[in-house]
Length: 141
Image 1 (cartoon, rainbow, N blue to C red):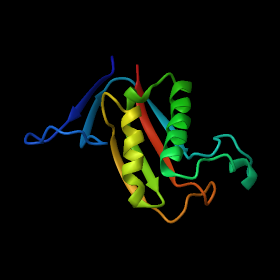
Image 2: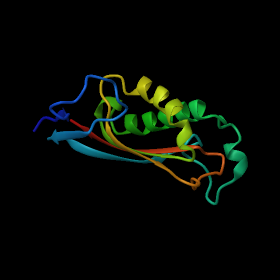
Image 3: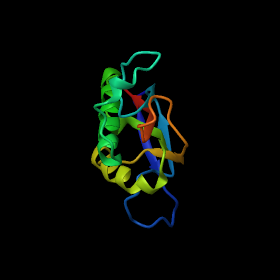
Image 4: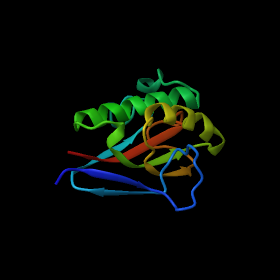
């Protein structure tokens, strides 16, 4: 069955841009699960070596771009694009930076917004300088 994606909105929803869809219905297709990515290089040593993360931007806008590029590479490896993303989880270390994230988010999700959850957390596992982590589920075919 060919993939069909339907963005569902409430009947009385105002016409405005939002960084997420309240609900999405998908029929058909193959599901892709993308692990969480930060602004750090996706391929790095374990245990972590802090010097591998020295080139990360130190602001949310820069880290958001790096995160979205890392996510883009994962999607491309599966034959997917941002248009195929159905849901994302976004983990921020400072909710006050959410507008900076949403500015970049809108550049990558131009035709639709996935269903998403945004949560403030104390710290990310990769490196204490990471401000953001995003995982995603996409449907292709």
